[in-house]
Structures are given as structure tokens and as C-alpha cells.
Amino acid sequence: MKAIAPILLLAGSAAGQQAAYGQCGGINYSGPTNCVAGYACTSYNPYYYQCVPGTAAPASTSTSKTSTSTAVTTTSTSKSTSSVKTSSTSSVKTSTSTSSSTKTSSTAGPVATGFAKTNGLQFEIDGVTKYFAGTNCYWCGFLTSNADVDHVFADMAAAGFKVVRVWGFNDVNSVPGSGTVWYQYLSASGSQINTGANGLQRLDYVVSSAAAHGLKLIINFVNNWNDYGGINAYVNAFGGSASTWYTNTAAQAQYQKYIEAVVSRYKTSTAVFAWELANEPRCSGCDASVIYNWAATTSRYIKSLDSNHMVTLGDEGFGPLAGGDGSYPYQAGAGGYTWVDNLNITTLDFGTLHLYPDSWGQPYNWGNLWVSTHGAACVAAGKPCILEEYGGTNNCTIENPWQATALKTKGIAGDMFWQYGDTLPSCNCQTSQDGNTVFYNQGNWDCMVTQHVAAINAL
Ligand SMILES: *[C@@H]1O[C@H](CO)[C@@H](O)[C@H](O)[C@H]1NC(C)=O
Ligand SMILES: *[C@@H]1O[C@H](CO)[C@@H](O)[C@H](O)[C@H]1NC(C)=O
Ligand SMILES: *[C@@H]1O[C@H](CO)[C@@H](O)[C@H](O)[C@H]1NC(C)=O
Image (tube, rainbow, N blue to C red):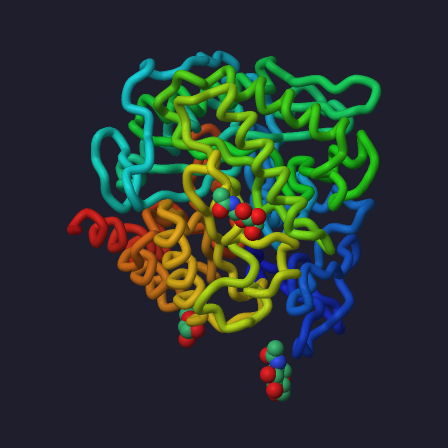
């Protein structure tokens, strides 16, 4: 995920230097190609190079809010997450003190009834089959205050969201101080899954609070990008590269161990909507069979652990597709996989697609073709799909048409904008602003959320 954010950039900088997270290269790009100190110009695809923190610079810090003492979290700079862009290092987030919250209740919600499931080309959630609205909260599981989690989920429920996507990973190669949340330490000489108060107990609270607020979670297991560790953290521990990670025996064994640790905690919780293999997996220069085989193996493994919940891949949608225009995202090399083939893996219950025209060198209105061609493929495969992330500078003129297209496209069963923002009570501070953040009841909230939810409810 994620997108980036040209915007946010801090002001620019002078003389020919691009600001943090600004574009610094790509086809037909004519702006500055050098980045401010601490940032390196990194190519994500032929159309988009971005200034991301240089290797030695975890310090970068955030723009925004930064954390204050308390917890908070959030922030970050960048985007975290996602896609293209982003790579930021993690650093940012998490700050925090453990103190607050500690309590944790773990828990899993009511047992055994009412698991969300597919129903034809849509989803049945709590007995209702219909298009749903949702959003992304990558940082929800990194909050250290239970009251903050409850506040965010209460706001989301009030907004009418049904499904929320959270990061179910937070991988490190060196154990941070006790106040910082991390889930898994990776090392060839002995990895460790953190089930403590600053570990998976934070995710426990997210699951229990989601259950209490009637929300369903998509929980994923690894990041393609370096935020919160990602595939890179496995590569640091087990060797190989981002492309060989999918077939690296030691890395895959640990990845499956981690999956088992998370799945076993919430196997009976009706607050889990689906397990997701990864955030935006790509395999540069690979044959499409690499991701296909990895996705088939991993999803089969998850189904063997848990037959209650749905499983999805988390891919962005790349590769040739009927009706596509042959632009970069529709080319075979864009993600190193063929999305439409992945869709036919029988242990994947539904498909995902993301949409970031800025990062992919496409005009904004191209997004409608992207959504409709994927919807047609979902219909052909007989599975629902979710427009799981989308961002276009948090501008309703740009994004409302995509929402309208998703809503009327058969095969698209829900959409979840990137990303949700809120004000946390513990610090009275705002969560991550990456240029695509829609803050609860502020700015473009009404045209991005309220009106869209009303249109969905009117169906
Ligand atoms: C780049 O600019 C040239 C000249 O304006 C144009 O013909 C071409 O389509 C542009 N390429 C992209 C990918 O936008
Ligand atoms: C799914 O797609 C792959 C790759 O094209 C193909 O080899 C396989 O036969 C397909 N499987 C099914 C069940 O359609
Ligand atoms: C939103 O996008 C439209 C279309 O690209 C543009 O004309 C408008 O200036 C943008 N609004 C803002 C506030 O950036």
C-alpha cells in the first residue's frame, strides 16, 4: 500500500532537491532528481521514483506528528505501507509506551457462529449479503492504549464501515526497547514470536475491540515493503533476496510458524473477516509461477489450520487482463505475477485489487477501467473481489468516480480506501498522515465516506 504522497511532502527544499517522499524520477518526469539529506531516490517502476529514507537514516522522522510521549503511534511519515512508495522504514511509528494499555484482554469474540463468508459474487457478513464499505488501518495493532483502539473502532462503526484491514505483522531484526511494539524477531540463530504485552497482545486487543464494535478484520502476515520489517527482515535473517524469499525454505518455514501463531489465537473469532498472505506481494523478474505456487501452498496451509475463515492474497491486480489497455499495470512484468491466474487458486476465497494511478504512471480516470476489468475477471472466476486500497491524494473529484464504478461493477463486492485517520484520545494527536489520509469527520470525510456509505446503504 500505499501510496504515497507527494503531497505531504514537506515543503520542498531548495534547489533542486526533492522533499521527503516526493517523486524524483520516472518516465516524463521533469522535476528534481536529487533528494534531501537522509533520503535516496528509489525506483518503484519506470514511471515512479520516490525519495525514501536512505538506508542509514531511520531517523528520519516524521513529519507529522511524531510522537509525543505517549504513545501514539502513528505517524509516520510516510506512508508506510504500501506500495510503491513507501518504504519507509519503520521507525516511525510505534513509539510508545507500553504502559498504558497493558491490559489486554485477549480474546476472541463470540464463538463459532456468524463467520463472514462469500455468497456468490458478494460477501455475507452477519447474515447480510450486500456490498460493503471499509477502510485501512495499518497502525491499529501498533497502538499501545486500549482506549485508543476502542475510540477508533467506535468511530469506524459509527461511520458505517464493516471491514477494516490491519497489519498482522511487525517484524524486526533486533529487539527494540520495551515500549515499542513488535511481533516477530527474525534471526537465523533463533527467531522469536512476541506474545507479550508489547507483542501479539496488542493484536489481541484489536480483535476483541473489533468484535465488540461489530467490525470484521482482514489481517495480513507479511509486508512486501520494508515498513514494519517485511520480506526484507526475513532476507536479513535468512539470506537470499526479495525474489527468492518465496522459495527460501528457512524463510518460508518461519513465515508459516508465524502464521500458525496468529491464526491459532483468533481461529474462533467472528471478528476475523479473512486472513491475507501478504501486503502487495511482488516478485521482480520472476516467472508468474513463483507467486502462484507460493500463494497456493500458503493458502492451503492456512485452510489446514483454520477452516472457519476466508483467505485472500493481498496482491495489487497486476498482469494481463481481458479488456485492459496494455498500460504498465496490465503488463506481465509489473508485479512478477499474473493476477487473473492467482484468482483461480481454490484455497483463496476472493480476490483483491489496489489502485494508485499516481504511483503507476496512469491518469486518474484510468482507475475506472482498472476496476471494471478486474470485476469482469472476478465474475468469470465466480469469486467476489475487493477494491482493497485506493488513493488519489484524498481528492473527491478524483476518487468518487472510482467508488461509483466499484459500486456498480459486478464482481466488486466492497471497497476500502487508503487510509483512515483519527484523533487519538491518549495524546490528543492525529494518526498517520501520508497524503491519502481521510480523517474522521474532517476535510473530505463527507464526500469520501458519508456520501459513499449512504449510497451503499441505499442499495
Ligand atoms: C511522455 O511524453 C511524450 C511527449 O509528450 C508522450 O508522447 C508520451 O505519451 C508520454 N509518455 C507517458 C508514459 O506519459
Ligand atoms: C490457474 O492458472 C494457472 C496459471 O495459468 C493454470 O496453470 C492452472 O491450471 C489454473 N488452475 C485452474 C484450477 O484453473
Ligand atoms: C482535485 O482533483 C481535480 C481533478 O484532478 C483538480 O482539478 C482539483 O484541483 C483537485 N482539488 C484539490 C483540492 O487539489
